[in-house]
Amino acid sequence: MSDNEVFEPAQEIVDEAWVSDWQALEEQAKADPAGYWQDRAHELEWSQPWDAVLDDSKAPFFQWFTGARTNIVTNAIDRHLSTARRNKLALIWVGEDTSKVRTFSYFALNREVERMANILKAMGVVKGDIVTIYLPRIPEIFFAMLACAKIGAVHSVVFAGYSSEALNARIDGAESKLVITADGSWVNGKVFPLKQIVDEAVKFSPTVENVVVVRNTGSEVTMDPTRDHWYDALCKLPIAKGHCDTVQVDAEDPLFILYTSGSTGNPKAIVHTHGGYQVGTYTTLKYCFDIKESDRWWCTADPGWITGHSYLVYGPLLNGATVFMHEGGPTFPYPDGWWELIEHYGITSFYTAPTAIRTLMRFGDAWVRKHDLSSLRILGTVGEPINPEAWRWFHRVVGNDRCPITDTWWQTETGMFQITTVPSMPLKPGSAGRPVFGQEAAIVDEEGNEVPDGTEGYLVLKNPWPAMMRTLFHDPDRYLNTYWSKYPGLYLTGDSARRDEDGYFWIIGRTDDVIKVSGHRLGTAEIESALISHPAVAEAAAIGLPHEVKGNAVHVAVVLNRGFEPSKQLEADLRSHVAETLSPIAKPDTFDFTEKLPKTRSGKIMRRVLRARALGQDEGDLSTLDND
Ligand code: WT7
Image (cartoon, rainbow, N blue to C red; front, top):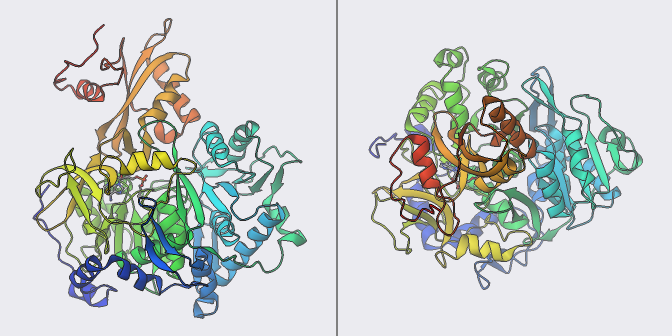
């Protein structure tokens, strides 16, 4: 990696950008972070102003805009309705079958959200209830999330690729009374049976009273007349009709919980709130992607992940932008489907993941060159480090050497970008950039001392920020222990990184037992417990190994129960078992069937040894290995 390869921004980009003089704003925000955030918050509507921008009296349980009343929907939809944006397209949706297109102006989106909100209310959902949403990339996921927010309910979106067991755990954790799903989703031309998975999941969920089912694939599903309701039928009922007020909530009231994988134990439910989250996502999208009135914004992430929450649903609508959402993936049916959509819909701003870029790069330039991508103004990436080679390809071939690339480092927990660039900054391929205005980051050693520039260490964040998670749902102790106990006063990201002499950060990877596979976040513990639930498996350990396209591949060491022999068939069985009990994303790529896992005397799996074995490297110091 070369720190010296720098792409300077074109003068016209600097002149046009919201932030032209980034050094000045960086300095100003550094001197007075609360003042910086207060100025940004004034660009949004609040029905009651705040007493304090930041209340750190219970740190690290920080609170933002305390005393204020607002609702993210007031700012994402309602405030646009009294302006010319009322008739502007809010959402353009294109199905996996690209002949299926649905568009919604802000006026039409509001009508859909009101209808869904009326239905939720009629089903007894009240402020503070958690609604589980298990929907694919279709417009109804926008309606469902926004409808919950509008009435002060809390959404818990579960990625519509998770298994029934994973869904069950998330429904139970949230004690949801209502689940919103679809009959199925389209995945590379095949139907993924969402409703069937919900049926399995709610069998063991005592709290669920109602399941709302959106018709999407037209597949046959079983409907329980006492529990299940077709959404299209509900929409025809009188209860669905009419205006629905946007409830004004406390700035610190929860907006959503979102489960994410940690290094140990169960997935963590991250809590985000209305007030700070709207300020953080609104500002970062506006500045880092220079969102303008005429933009068409496409974020390829699924709404089931934080990227979808912050920068597919909320951030763009808060900015009054036109959002583009596509049901399909990058290569089906042809590897130029995405380029075709950019050309056809005049996409100006395109935000995707390194893994997708690497996948498409392998198909060669010709697929891209077939299309006129001159509408593109700015590109972005997220989810894992982007290798300079993929960065350069994205810049040269997709962006025609013209479009800045905004690499955005952040996390489910941070809610908004933390390390990135604005288009007027010089770019360095492979570096995520600089801390966002108002933030300071550092690289520290084991003891918490800052290390010299160029040295690898733990990445920490120094300042609180408005869109930060407030706690872990029902588990404030784990919030403290996971993020704030290693270095009191510093937020532990779980990543390793280095900073160069220009103040640019280079992310290296996770330091804990989290594996990023194609940008998806998996806990080794989750993969291991999925494997152990198979009758052939006595013990299992999962690690990530470098992979050219996926960033990391899942490698597992497995000890078999007596009576089972390693075979290709068993590998295939274990792969589909993990897909069914956890998620297809988590399927192991490679297996090492072994008699014994390398463990320390205290019983901790030595992943370093497994990694060395898998890569054919020296296993290093084995003195702590338990050899009994
Ligand atoms: C982890 C968070 C919120 C973004 C989607 C993923 C890795 C994320 C980058 C980037 C290098 C990145 C980190 C981080 N990561 N973005 N631009 N460059 N690494 O959110 O699933 O909560 O995962 O993703 O390791 O800790 P997430």
